[in-house]
Image 1 (cartoon, helix red, strand yellow):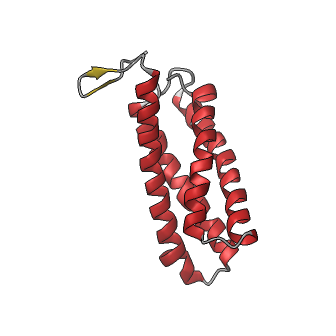
Image 2 (tube, rainbow, N blue to C red):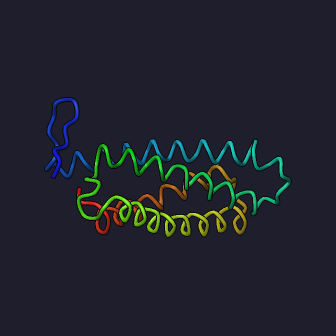
Length: 147
């Protein structure tokens, strides 16, 4: 196992520090996702004249996929031990499999919040992200990486 050191502190065996760093990685990935969602829904996809449900679903999907890549790479640097359980190509495939399931949760919750309940899309996106982060952490820790 590769040693994890940050600012001269070895946290290889500290689950608490890894959890805090995961929350940092996840928090910054959420900011990336929310910013991309806002840009897609406000400027990019809105120009195509899509209905609110289609616009929300497409913006959610694009933002989620791009932030997942960001999360994967930063998570491997700070939290998880990439390549320790599986070779990197299988690992990335598993990350995207888990992420696709997370995207399914995202889309379902966004549909419920925006279309069925009539909530504002950006508020719905933030709430949805907070719910899905639990799935992402537990599934990556249990099935993909050694932390």
